[in-house]
Length: 141
Ligand SMILES: [Zn+2]
Image (cartoon, rainbow, N blue to C red):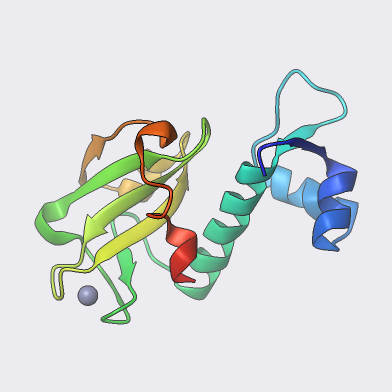
């Protein structure tokens, strides 16, 4: 997962067309800048696709999170969330559901988390190495 991949290798692995991978890159999938041809990190691809799938299924605006227990989009309790970096370029916003107290996740590109967080109070937590790997949004879907 942490090995670098070319566009062709990602397309092969996921059984999609190369142009589909190029479209994802246009849509924000991070690539290593200095490399030609483009090099992608497996963890970035996985997180990008997870974010995409969730946001398609559960459209939520800035500052809103989908609670899986209540099955609705809500503002986090106290208007507060934590930003947890997962990789250099991708992270997750985490907040508590005001109705049931469940932990809610939202994957975000590190460059764009301010947009996703809207007007919420955001506390930035430590990098991936400091986190328990079991605690990740993929486990829920
Ligand atoms: Zn809830």
